[in-house]
Image (cartoon, rainbow, N blue to C red; front, top):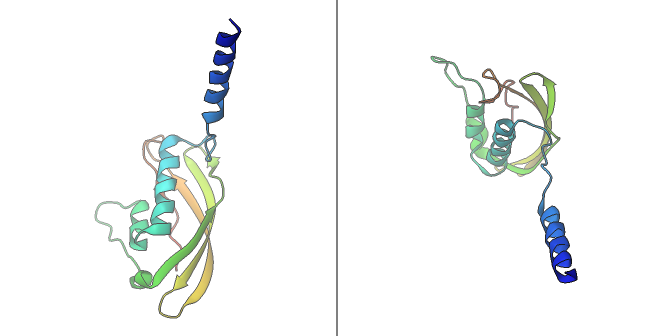
Length: 132
């Protein structure tokens, strides 16, 4: 009897220890995923792809700066995503980067506004991407 109780308590504690808190808190799941993908693209991807996270209407031409292949992001640190109003969330990211041709380290603060027009099914960046 004691062995069964000990085993049950041990297994229960093991299950509770495995629960990892959500680093984004009570953020809509689709938004949390979008923000994580955005962060990964900025850190590791082609910076031209961050412009695809904005809202683009049919017929609009997307303008992407030409110098982005000269930028290498070295650090990306974001605050927690917080609700600003219904279907409008924000966060701020501190981004450090190097201009490859000059080996100059620069920093920018990127205030991000994320919005949804379809009650949280899809999200887009509502403000412009900062200039690198």
